[in-house]
Image (tube, rainbow, N blue to C red; front, side, top):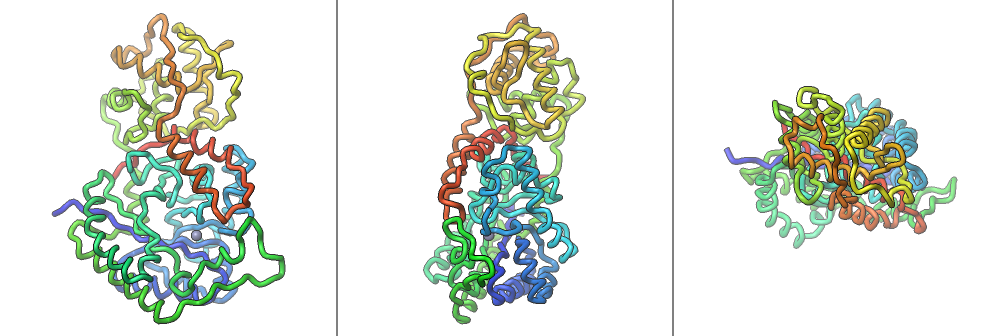
Length: 472
Ligand SMILES: [Zn+2]
C-alpha cells in the first residue's frame, strides 16, 4: 500500500444575493455525493438567513453526508472581522468574536442538525482572536488561517485552535475549472502535487474548490456591494453580479467531476472528510517516560523551534518554569495549550534587566510565569520579580542554554547564578507570519484606513503557541 495523501475539498457558501447560487450548492453537493466524496461547505450566517427567507432549506438538506462549517456571520459587510477587531486586544477581542459570530454559528447548527466541522476565514479578514474564540463557539478547527509553522506543518495548533494554513491550500480551483488551458495544466500537475503531499510528514492536501456562486455568476456578489469599506445604503437592494452562461456552468461542473476522477486515479491519494481529518488530528500526543528531555532536545538550537509535535514554545517555557518550582513534570505531563503573551508590553520596562539571575531570582521569575499562565492561560510578556522584568524570550533562551549544559532532572536544584542570554526575539517564523498577515489583510474588503498594528502584534505574539498537529 503506498503512503497516501489525505485529500479534502472545501467550498465557501456566502452569496445571499443571487437565488441561482442556492441551486449551485445543490448541484455541487449532489455531484460530489454521486462521486462518493464528502466535501466541506462553509456557510455564512447571512447565506443561511437568505435560504430561510427564500424557503430554500432543501439546500441545507442537500448537504447531508457532507461536512458543514461556518464562514462568519456577515462576511464582507462592514465592519468585517479585522475591522471589528481593529481596536481590541486579546481577551476583549476573543469576546467580541464570540459575541458577533455566535448567532450565525448557532443558526447553521440548528438548521442542519449537524456539528460544525470548522471556521473558514472570510476573504482576507482575520485576526488571531478568531482561532482564540473557536473553543467558546464549539468549533473544532480553523481553515484558511493566516498562521503557519514555517515547516509546512498543516494542520498545526495556533492560539489554542487546530488550524489549516491558507498558504497550504491549492486553489481556489474554480479559476482553473473555467479555463481549458488552466484546467489541463492543473490535471497535468495533480499527480505530482498529490505525491508531494503523500511524502510530506502531514500527508494533508487541501483542495479549495472555491465558491458555488462562481459556478453560476461571472463575478463575486460582495465586490460589487462592499468595496472601499462602505455598506450599501440601507433599504436599497444589493447589486447582483452578471450571470454565467449555462454552458459555462456545465463546463465547470464537468471539469470538477473530472478533477475528482483524476485525484482517484493517483494511487497515492485518498479522499477524506474534513471532520474525520480534524478528529484524527485533535488527539493529544503521547508523553512516554522521558518526554521532557525529548522536548528539550527538540527545542535546543539557535532558533526557537515551532514545529515540535510535543510542545509549543509557550508550553515548554511553562513546563521549564514548573520544573524549577520543583514539580515532577515528567510525571505530571505538560498541561493544556498555553497562549503567547497577550498583554501589551511596556517598552520602557523591557529596556534593561540584569545580565544574570541568582537562584532565588530565577525561582521567583519562574513562579511569576506559572502564576500568569494559571490565571490567564497565556505567558506574560515579562517575567517579573522585585524590580526585575525579563522578556520571556530571554528567559526561554537562557533556560534552554542552562538545561543543555546540565541534566534535566537537576532543574529543581539550580546553579548559584544563571546568565541571561541576549535573545529577546520570537521564533523566526513570527516575522513571516506577521508580515504575511499585514500584507494580506490590506485588501478591498476593508476600510482603506484600517489600522492593523495591534492585530499584527497579537498575530506575532501567538507564534509562541505554535505546535505541529499529531496524526492519530
Ligand atoms: Zn468567503
